[in-house]
Length: 470
Ligand code: SF4
Image (cartoon, rainbow, N blue to C red; front, side, top):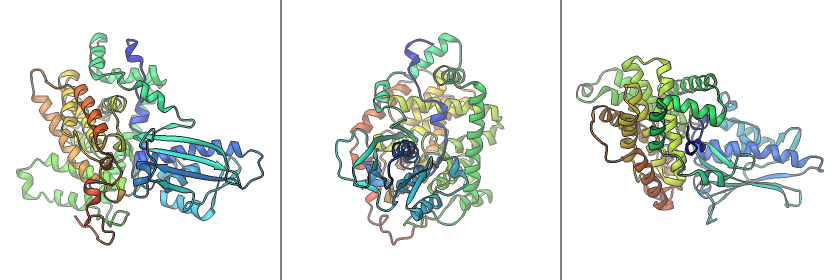
């Protein structure tokens, strides 16, 4: 591996990881930040006389859409020591309510006051933030003076920087360091494929053995399938003022009845849509999902993998390899652009998920790295350039759930086209990632997870009294 390629890429443990919905950047990230800060705060309380209070201030996109994304509840759970694994068996709402009722949290035997309804501040006026998802956590003495303060940045996909979790500067410095073209050249020079390359990144940059990586991927695939099964059987409405009806169960039942239009429209495309909606609805309900690369876009990859596995009978070992290629594509986008809707809009979430899935499907279909995987990922992402993030009411429901279905179908289409294409592709994956990044930076803040533009301000959709049945 050349020196240039030693620059750190995110690990598969960071890109594909257990999470709770509805948002990786606005739910999971703040939860992990709060959990990190609570430990530091407990140490700072030490032998003080007591009466210290924790105050959390959310800025930027976290402030604008935090309520719909359950950021305040996630912060409460994080302060109480919860992470996604602990919440797999207990609902976020129940944990937050327990914190609300107690009026304090306890960490390492230290008690700190925390009023969930007063001590989470949504500051929508702050400007010139270092990152659109910024949060400050403070431990205040009984007089209101800060004992310690930490600033955290939720940079997408549940990755958090700040406090004890790494520097924002490190990520900015590494931006633009590794291109897919360099990775492909390195693979050809070393005589290895993308899967082997991904294993070597895990070993050399993150200290993960192959057995650890395989165990993680098996867990991830299991969690993806569980989320899908729950989504396919659950009925009722999703949380939030829209009272949006869950659709995956009914859609699947109608699909199994083999309605006539399946004769002329691809059954695989319909199934991919239904599977993606099932997982996205689980996410919207605050269920246990896997970031791929985010919670908002978590339905795309599992839907594509399941459709291909059912069609081709792919082994779980093959799915493991496909997950690694998907993760590598996601890591490349996260490093060279962004996977945060607050930074670059939905092109960084659904667009990235679709690119990851297209590459993974190509691998399952036997495609080569340079001619098919790269081309499919490029094609899938290209068609999402400029896609805004405009979640209605700050809830990860409209348009997010159906965008997962569209992202899955686009990925299958891009993979299929790449497998039958020949000749030189005029646009590379690296070109599109760069264009996506620039487009995202140019996008007006109203279209980057602030719920201040697009569908998010549609007066009919935003009417809290209007029940939605789609
Ligand atoms: S619109 Fe896209 S980026 Fe925005 S919250 Fe929904 S899925 Fe995430």
